[in-house]
Image 1 (cartoon, rainbow, N blue to C red):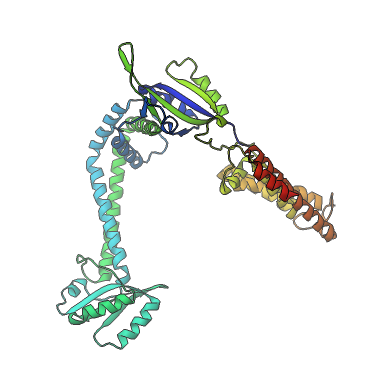
Image 2: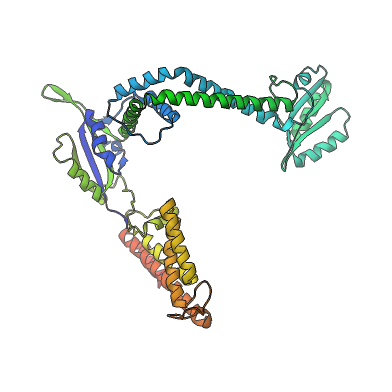
Length: 474
């Protein structure tokens, strides 16, 4: 079913928004709306504009925590973002030399991998790159050409005595190689090869030796880089382990701050007003929350004088449509995957999850009714769902239940129809009856789907659509 939603108006002192997010809103699922869009007609509000002062510190903390190998953060204490920034900067300075060298190694490794990829297709060329670069009267071009065009280029080469094409590597689509031509004919040959879609590849002049020896040397370098990188990472982890507790607290603090900071883009602020001797500003947040969560949130903030919440029914606000949140019994919840795959229903429409679950599994059971195979599906699907958490496995288990039920009705066990007597009928004994039942069942499903469509149209107050559906069904 589609959960009933409430549009909440949340307001309080501007400086208190982070505490509200941490203490209350972070516990619940809430979809924020841009408050400025709803309140753009008011003159005394403005966007909640601030600069995230701790964005860089959070990036550093995230990098260090990931390098340490941490997954879930379990902070030992709550600290303020300013203190967290100081902790991160301190740890970053201690590990700065290691981190810097790791970054250098990363760039060197990427450059080596790129160069290896460039010269790999030319490994069959048994000639030094440096010597090719020293040619004074011969021009050369390395590249690749599609196989279809290569055959056409071959005919041109056969009829021309001033071009030599050295084929290096081929696959299903391309031929890699190099062509050599006297400098006086280079422009003419380049134009011809370009017309055959020859894609030039520029080989750097830093390559030493033949392509094959250069490729092997780069492979040895990569192993050296990898070995040094692993050693530095181990050294970094050992260093970070000494500061694990402080780093975890700092990372958690900055993560919460940046997460809360992102909420500011949905908020607006009132213009400063004097309250006694103090100038005060207030934030305003709009957000959709399920009715159950909204009730719990209101109970949480009882007694907190700094937070004020006002509820608004979903159909009262026409500026922003409520989101659709599905809530079904546990046995039907895996089938929500099908609904989400084809698109969630609108807020005021019926949730087809239970209808899909029953019809899908019932039809499966009718088509594949067998006690033995059905029980195998039940056991296998249940175990996979419990171990792997796969929704598809849960669907298979439910389908297996219906398969088992119809197996008893049909009297079939692992395909043998003489082990048990059927409770209802054997489908193959009366083909005409089976076909008529299948046709009747299909007609019933179609009529039921039309009724649901009409109900959705009425709930959406689209009477034209309801009439059209009624006419089709009649």
